[in-house]
Image 1: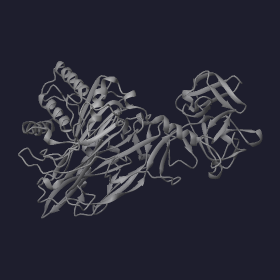
Image 2 (image 1 turned 120 degrees about the vertical axis):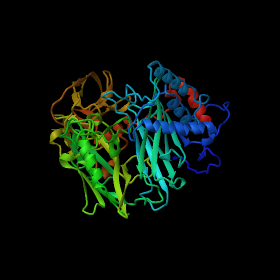
Image 3 (image 1 turned 135 degrees about the horizontal axis):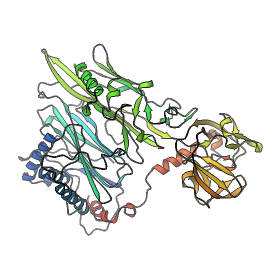
Image 4 (image 1 turned 90 degrees about the horizontal axis):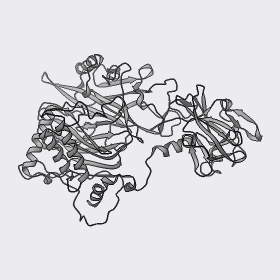
Length: 622
């Protein structure tokens, strides 16, 4: 459920007050579970006038240290940065009394920074030593930043931040605020906390631009996250709009949604963008990556136009290209990210030869219309969006999110006024007001080795590579099922070889499902010696399970017409592979998805005990 939003006029010298949807309940109430996540609104009345004044000053100090669009870790040995964090958490209702372990870890981190000799004004070199390592795929970014370019409602600003962590975390707190460039609040600080989650945390925010005479704005986000007994944090903000006062600046208006030509659901029109990683389904595959073994490449093509008097700034675009081609990072130029929604983490679009200028390949493929009213991007063919290889792993659902900076300008009475806008294209369904919503996207793979014998009607067999659409194959629940689709590709990691007491042997990819007597459908990677699996002749015990490299082709099938499947039960679109009962591509996708999703069990049963008090107090807050 999305957080409620309300506005209040600040009636005293402190500035704009925030309404809070939270109140306190008695600590004597019995412990209850609210699930993995809570969200709510900040409340400026939680700060005294002196605290509020310090918070505003500390914000300004921090923005003097941090560049826009650059995620940083904060130095808690710096009194101003530490005070900023404490005030930010207090606005969200987080205190040492109701969040004891969070603040214990925060104090531990502060002492570590003091011991390292961090001086005031210093920012640590990276978000943390762990996050700075080469294999770290965590992200914290501003997802949307709008001044109402997508609507004709006056002063209707909106924004969102998101954070993702590989494998999730014990605890994640993330907030988002909307201010002008003096940090005067234009909306309610919004926050979200997750226990035993953190794979993808999205926080939206609303801004009322009529509360300021300025026309330059900031979306900012702070994150605190704990894994084990280590706490990390990060801060990021984005600036947009114009440096000219709003009384003389016209707000741009875009023609939205933008036109998107790729990626699209083009194969089955099944409301799903299917990306084939190491193998290609003949029919149900929108994009084929089987020829690219080291990374993920996706086509990204579209355009956006402007209907106000503004035009796109060729001068700024040329500067983006020049800087990025010279390996000068321009984080203000936007981002394109692929997020592994079920397991956490993700990858940036990046140039093939460098990990520095991440948006170079996008801006090198941007052109403008003759009247400079339409911006086109065409990352297709050899220029397809190239993501580093950290995202090339077996996944189910992925989130593609792109924030594209739009450099604009308006000339009135021979005076040129620059304006920075942006659009957001995403399939993160928690983002409240994206410019464009992609359909759900999946990246999957699972197969059997070439040479595997598939049983046909009447007891005959055929090598899986010879099976084609329209063929009929054997099934334990019906005389035969129709082959609806086939897949072929390669496998880059060791496969699973099983051998049974009956002398059967089968080589399959680690995610391929096989029917186990005691456990139902099980992915091959979960098999172990002694498991009793189903075969053509009945139960058969595994005597050997091992990993084996395979350099040949791998294949899969999907079986069952709609009419045939109506007569089947759950997980019965199976085939006989070398005599074993194994699932087809439909069952494969089901169990890949299940494997990637968090188990819906008691949060307290999974949560480390040191977090139980924080969780209990959080559950009591209304």
